[in-house]
Image (cartoon, rainbow, N blue to C red; front, top):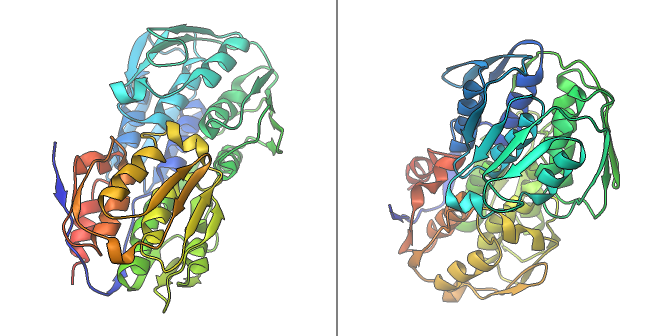
Length: 420
């Protein structure tokens, strides 16, 4: 297991290019598989999640080609062979593939590494079964491995919204192939709403309209899915780390391509830093964050931007007043327990943090911050957040630092390149 020793940085004045959005890329790839014709996607990231999606689509028999960051796929088939698809540690990929398998008539098994097998899948699997699919667990109900066979015959199903929006997005993307489309009744408050809205936007790019999204109901029509070309915008979640560096070590950081028309909800991170005392400039071509004179804490509901909790937590550790993060109790079932595991490791670095039912309380900790060796718990977002904090605090070592390949293989190279 590789440990990364983080090097502290001085005041920054940097432009940082981040990889394409894996959220957009994986949605586009699945829709491209369902579309009739050839689709071309540019700025496709090279992280493990996207690599796993591309490998799975190739295993299903799709004509997939990659040249650098450009991917083409010829879609429109459902006559794939009986096979097993391995998603590694990729929760989004595995859930999207589980839904895709229900479109075809041959049994497809979806599996992953042990940490992924421990993550919950029951709401999605139960929904596919209720819609007429065959869903056979390999070991435990509601977990991987699972073998799925279609086609689906139903047109309406109820599903919880407070566990993961990925279940909802997965069902939305296969809905156009169902004879009467699909109506989803959302039985509990929907979390990560911007990701559901992102799914609707991608579907519309493939000619599926109208997609109706409300707080308790989502309707996707039966429609022809048309091939399209799409440029993948930079990953807003990944962009949070270099932007946070400006707040934590001081200076200015610009991320090109994540401007005023950004589709991803996590692009709101710059505004969070603005509330914490940073200067924020957003144009049509990018976003710039500049440190202010006083980095202060914030009271914030992060239910819609929950992937950013580790980033906000490390910024909060450097603030002059307390931070309360709310509305994110559901992130205990992410790649790690993103509340308990995150808090345990932050305490190793001297952060005064308390886990509450729906989030975290973080007290000003600047004077107590210290070096130490922290674990990632197989979670790329923890690893990159610890990298940000280690850029300010000497002596931080991150165990299993290579877990960042899930979304940003070049993260540590980027961080080292910013040293002054």
